[in-house]
Length: 270
Image (cartoon, rainbow, N blue to C red; front, top):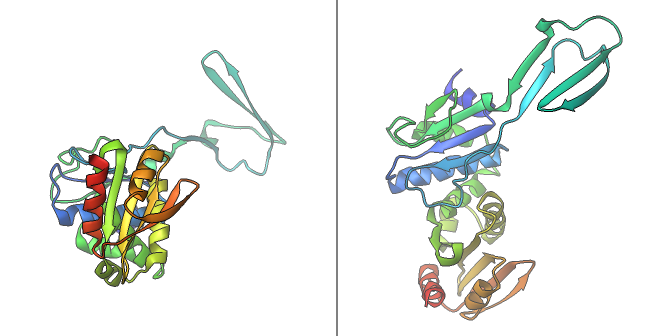
């Protein structure tokens, strides 16, 4: 099976980073992560020194007991727990079940390690025992993006840009900023950023807060997700805005989003 087929068929993808990834390697890893999520796959980032809300490992395994060729003759199924055992009972309208009809399958068989950089998966600190691994080269990144709808690619590129810039601050607040030039280069608008903010909240640490600042022609605006009322109040003290269902949309006088973010962080850390 070639790399493209492995990626397309895999349901659980671990993007493995080297211990000290370069800026380009980390951005590529975030782009692979974003594309995998847009394609409906489970994805996680792994690395020894990774400081990201998206590094949670896969939890648990799902096993399937398959009865091959018997779907037309099974009339009833039930199970019984006894001590530490589970018994499955299949009632057939006719015929018999043999060992050739029974198969045990694990969802983890479709796992894939995507290696970013020139190291092996083990050198990249991957902890999952996967059956397949491929190297995350630029050519393969282009192939991965080609699996997406053309309408999805701009959103994926904006999402990966924000993910690669997320910085952890006290009280588990993750922050990032987006410039007007970033919107131009990713062919996106403020509307895409609202979707990006929601996706980061869904994909990331559920106990964290997320704050994204972005530039408009006249000012800097921000989107915050937080259940921490103190974070909400201290950020809002530096600008104007409103809060609804733990989401806050706000505006700040600075035109430069990085300057606005630095000013807010000083307030939060004081």
